[in-house]
Length: 189
Image 1 (cartoon, rainbow, N blue to C red):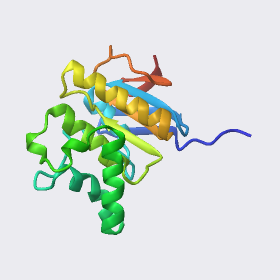
Image 2 (cartoon, rainbow, N blue to C red):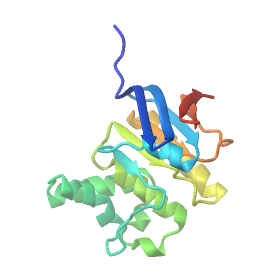
Image 3 (cartoon, rainbow, N blue to C red):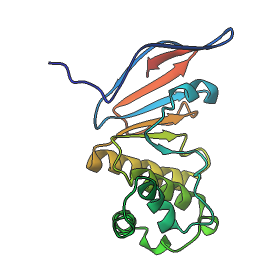
C-alpha cells in the first residue's frame, strides 16, 4: 500500500498570460519530510500554499504585541482560552530557549530573534506542514544557521513536514529532498 502524502501535486500548471510559471509539476510531500525548493522568487511563489503554518520572509510580527502575545495570537484566533494560550506559548519559548524575550516587543529584537519567534508562532497550533518562505534571506550567516538548525530540530522532533523556499540556489540544507524550480519545471537536485 502506497503511503499518501500530506501534499500531493499532480500535473499542476499555472500561466500568467504567455508566461508558464509552472508546467505539469508533480510533487509529493510526506509527513516528517523536510524539502527545499529553490528558484527565482516569482517562480517559487506559486508553491507557497494556504492554510498551513507559514513562516514569512519579513517576520510579520505585530509590533503592538509582546513576543508572548504574538505567539499566543494563532491560539486566540482558534478559540483557545487565555490560560491554555499562555501555557502553550510559554512552553514553546522555554523549549527553544527564548523565555527571556517573552515580554519584549518585536521592534527591539534582532532580525534572527524575530525570525525565530515567527517560526515558534507558526508552531502554536501544531501544524502538520510548515512553509518557510525564504526565511534566511534577511539574516546574517550566523542567524541563518541558527534558523536552519531550528527548522531541522522541529522536523526531527515534532515530525512536521517542512517546505522551505529559497532563491539561493547554492545553499545546502539538511533536507530529505532538494528541488529547483526552473523555467516552470520542478527538478530534483
